[in-house]
Image (cartoon, rainbow, N blue to C red; front, side):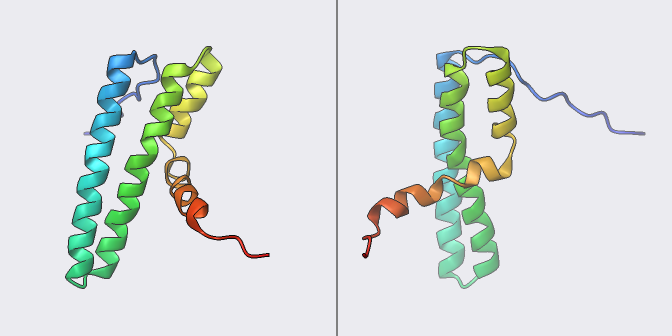
Length: 106
């Protein structure tokens, strides 16, 4: 029997749904980061790195969810949902916090 593919949601979210999504993403990111640290401390480096990457992706959902609730047209909404489902879109923002804390040498 061939499995049926579920259709991805691509619609509008209200503020309460976005807040719930942000809270869930933040909680999941914290849990994954804590588990990654536990595995790192135990010497399980590869698995710790994998969980850390998942934590980064999970925290990357927050800015995209904010953008979804602020979209003004269908094209922008489709674009934000595409970003939400993209691994690279969710894991590229983590470096910005570090960039601000590194001194610039001239």
